[in-house]
Image (cartoon, rainbow, N blue to C red):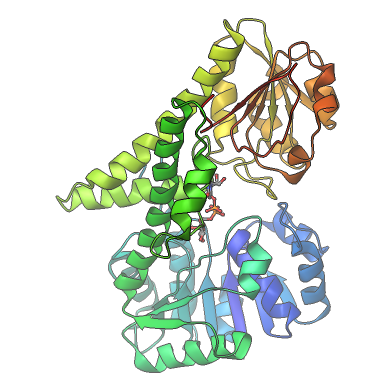
Length: 437
Ligand code: UGA
């Protein structure tokens, strides 16, 4: 069985690398020739733990790469579509990339006898697979879904920073289609990879699409909820949000995960999906008061961090502020919707001088701020002469920092938005987000 994967971003490249490293016959497709060359040489276009070693194993086995969608359409039994569905400036979901890919798939279907299953992994708003993707494919191929091809919705749940691990060990597989035979075929395929231990839910396309949005919206809700509690704890001396989170998380109805208070959730998924869901519901005449509050709580969280900095440092003009961590989460170089970027923008407006450190995201950050801020590959250099240090991303190396590491600062004020430091120096002002003092 030959498998095509169209779009080699986080999801597509992780999936292609893991499957080919296990010996599956894979063709990875991407329109970006430069990206394809990088991948062919065994390098990943982005930082992701374990991806390069997995990719290299795949290249040694059965991973082929091409820019030609028609190659996949002519030769593959299963074609996974894993292209990006980014956010437009008004919070809507931008379907241009996926519809363009489907146009090319449809045009290739017109000229082939092959009848592949086309499996949509990209996140799309409920109804998109049936109302837009199916229509586009049928229009271009002049074939009916269920006859010349079938269409399955198969959302992905992997996390950046753990993409390979999650691809190897998914917690759940959703198969959305009204075609029983195709659902069974995809189920068998997944069982060949993962065995029978992973729950597989078979449903229709639109329910599968809703599951993806419900999942990400619920995760975002948990974070905004705990941020709300963190802001409460901040005002109550002696309280600590992490102890509250640990306690409520023991209740099995709540669970421990996604209760780490933060300066706001970021990344290319949660902010985008919450907003897209809000707009989708609003367009149906069903405004989501809950998701609106989740989103607003998230936006306002950065103001809490600014307040903490100003309360400790005073007027920020010409003060040097050190930001530790630029990526939206640890083990990633991705700065999309990163709260660190938003924080720097606000601090620059307040005429602070910014020095930054991040183990992986410096190059991406340079494309936004150029020479407006100073970049450091060593934490000590970023801290030098600083009036205040703000820990934004919970990289492991920051949690290992000791009292003496901060001696190079002009004023030893540390704002720890992730509460990862364990310092006990009386000459140092330590402010933990969600820790009332
Ligand atoms: C998220 C989901 O977790 C994945 O299941 C999903 O597949 C993915 O979106 C997607 O739709 O593609 P991801 O964006 O990679 O994954 O990152 P998360 O681990 O969810 O973190 C998102 C943000 O929330 C980060 O800024 C992180 O620091 C923050 N976060 C997460 C917290 O502040 N506290 C927590 O307890 C957990």
